[in-house]
Each structure stands twice: as structure tokens, then as C-alpha cells.
Amino acid sequence: MRTPRGARRRSLSIRAVESVPGGAIVLVPDAVVRHAVTPARTTRAYFRARCRAEGRSKAIVSSLVGSGSALSTERTYVTHTLPTAVLRGLRPRAGRPAAPGQSVAVVEGLVLTATAYAGRLLRQRVRPVTSDPATAADAAQTAA
Image (cartoon, rainbow, N blue to C red; front, side):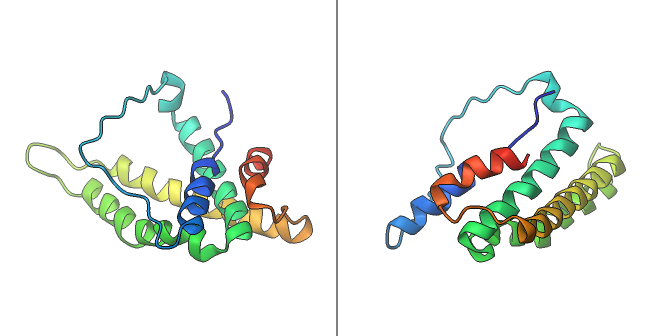
């Protein structure tokens, strides 16, 4: 299995928004996107590896652009979206039984991501990442 990697899109998005005064990324709800997901990406092992890679990547981007920019979306995600997903998995809904495994996976993903983020931050104190934002993606690739 190929190791999942991250940070390229996030780093590019942060730089794009910060390079234009008042810049923003715009959601286009009726946009059509086709994205193939290979069977290998539907496994628990891939999910775990992806969570760890995401945590490491967030730590690298945080060190380059600051945690405010790097983690702004994640704060809402962790405080609202993930708890909602956990509760949804624990409650039966119209015609559907509870899905506690879904709730466990959400919590597991958060723990893996946060642990990898903290571990990478600790390693960066010993071996700092380059301060050139253009190389953030390359640094994230080698961290994975």
C-alpha cells in the first residue's frame, strides 16, 4: 500500500488566500467533481495511515504558516463536526440501526491524527522544517 500524504492542497490554499488582500476560497455547491477511490483506500489500514499522515502534515504546515492559519478549519471540525458524527453513529435513525463502529472510527481517527501531529511537532523541535512555504509540500511528503 502506498503511504498517503497530505499538505499540498492545504499549503497551496493558505498561500493563495494570504497572497491576495481579502482573498478567499469559494465553495461552488453545484460543481461536479469526479474522484475515483481505489479499493485499497477503503480499508481500515489505509484510514489509519491517512490519519497519521494528515497529523504529520498539519504539524509541518503549522510550523511554516502558524497554527492559526493551518488549523482554522480543524478547530470547527474537531469541536462540532466530529462530535456530531459520533452521536449520529450512536443513535438509531429512521429505518437504520445505530452504527457504533462508525463512532469508534471517528474517535480512532481523531486520536491517530492528534498523536501524529504532536509527535511531529516534538520531532521538529529537534530538526526544524525549512521556513520556505513553497517547500511545505515537499517537507510534508518526506515526513509521511
